[in-house]
Length: 102
Image (cartoon, rainbow, N blue to C red; front, side):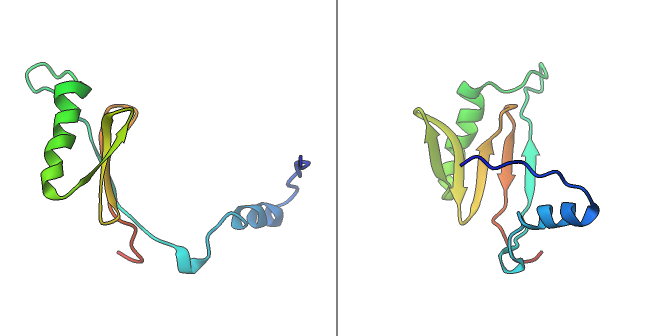
Protein backbone atom coordinates (compact mmCIF):
# COMPACT_ATOMS: atom_id res chain seq x y z
CA UNK A 1 0.00 0.00 0.00
CA UNK A 2 1.38 3.39 -0.96
CA UNK A 3 0.80 6.10 1.61
CA UNK A 4 0.33 9.67 0.55
CA UNK A 5 2.94 11.89 2.17
CA UNK A 6 1.50 14.40 4.57
CA UNK A 7 2.67 17.97 4.60
CA UNK A 8 3.68 19.18 8.03
CA UNK A 9 2.06 22.54 8.48
CA UNK A 10 2.94 23.50 12.05
CA UNK A 11 5.23 22.83 15.00
CA UNK A 12 2.73 20.55 16.75
CA UNK A 13 2.52 18.25 13.72
CA UNK A 14 6.32 18.12 13.56
CA UNK A 15 6.57 17.19 17.25
CA UNK A 16 3.88 14.50 16.84
CA UNK A 17 5.63 13.09 13.77
CA UNK A 18 9.00 12.86 15.54
CA UNK A 19 7.46 11.46 18.74
CA UNK A 20 5.73 8.70 16.77
CA UNK A 21 9.14 7.20 15.99
CA UNK A 22 10.39 7.23 19.59
CA UNK A 23 10.73 4.21 21.83
CA UNK A 24 8.84 4.22 25.12
CA UNK A 25 10.85 5.62 28.03
CA UNK A 26 11.10 2.12 29.54
CA UNK A 27 13.17 1.02 26.51
CA UNK A 28 15.59 3.97 26.48
CA UNK A 29 19.27 3.02 26.78
CA UNK A 30 22.58 4.79 26.60
CA UNK A 31 25.88 3.43 25.37
CA UNK A 32 29.39 4.60 24.65
CA UNK A 33 31.16 4.59 21.31
CA UNK A 34 34.86 5.14 20.78
CA UNK A 35 36.60 5.02 17.40
CA UNK A 36 40.28 4.46 16.71
CA UNK A 37 42.08 4.87 13.40
CA UNK A 38 45.14 2.65 13.14
CA UNK A 39 48.20 3.81 11.23
CA UNK A 40 51.86 2.94 10.87
CA UNK A 41 53.97 5.33 12.94
CA UNK A 42 56.88 5.25 10.46
CA UNK A 43 54.82 6.19 7.38
CA UNK A 44 51.56 7.53 8.83
CA UNK A 45 49.76 5.29 6.32
CA UNK A 46 46.52 3.66 7.53
CA UNK A 47 46.51 -0.01 8.48
CA UNK A 48 45.49 -2.38 5.74
CA UNK A 49 42.98 -5.12 6.46
CA UNK A 50 45.38 -8.04 5.91
CA UNK A 51 48.16 -8.01 8.47
CA UNK A 52 46.74 -5.01 10.29
CA UNK A 53 43.07 -4.72 11.20
CA UNK A 54 42.49 -8.45 10.69
CA UNK A 55 45.41 -9.24 13.00
CA UNK A 56 44.08 -6.92 15.73
CA UNK A 57 40.60 -8.48 15.60
CA UNK A 58 42.07 -12.00 15.67
CA UNK A 59 44.33 -11.20 18.64
CA UNK A 60 41.47 -9.66 20.66
CA UNK A 61 39.61 -13.00 20.57
CA UNK A 62 41.87 -14.25 23.37
CA UNK A 63 40.00 -11.88 25.70
CA UNK A 64 36.72 -13.81 25.19
CA UNK A 65 35.46 -11.73 22.25
CA UNK A 66 33.32 -13.74 19.80
CA UNK A 67 34.18 -13.13 16.12
CA UNK A 68 31.68 -12.06 13.46
CA UNK A 69 32.51 -12.91 9.86
CA UNK A 70 31.38 -11.63 6.48
CA UNK A 71 32.37 -13.63 3.39
CA UNK A 72 34.99 -15.45 5.46
CA UNK A 73 36.60 -12.24 6.78
CA UNK A 74 36.47 -11.21 10.42
CA UNK A 75 34.71 -7.82 10.60
CA UNK A 76 33.66 -7.52 14.23
CA UNK A 77 33.76 -8.96 17.73
CA UNK A 78 31.04 -9.14 20.36
CA UNK A 79 30.95 -9.82 24.09
CA UNK A 80 28.29 -9.20 26.75
CA UNK A 81 26.31 -6.74 24.62
CA UNK A 82 29.39 -4.76 23.59
CA UNK A 83 31.08 -4.90 20.19
CA UNK A 84 34.21 -3.95 18.31
CA UNK A 85 33.44 -3.39 14.65
CA UNK A 86 35.29 -2.44 11.48
CA UNK A 87 33.80 0.79 10.15
CA UNK A 88 33.64 1.85 6.48
CA UNK A 89 36.65 4.19 6.82
CA UNK A 90 38.85 1.39 8.19
CA UNK A 91 38.57 2.56 11.79
CA UNK A 92 37.68 0.25 14.67
CA UNK A 93 34.71 1.22 16.82
CA UNK A 94 34.19 0.02 20.38
CA UNK A 95 30.49 0.16 21.25
CA UNK A 96 29.70 -0.37 24.90
CA UNK A 97 26.69 -2.44 25.91
CA UNK A 98 23.40 -0.49 26.12
CA UNK A 99 22.74 0.54 29.73
CA UNK A 100 19.75 2.04 31.54
CA UNK A 101 21.90 4.85 32.98
CA UNK A 102 25.44 6.08 33.14
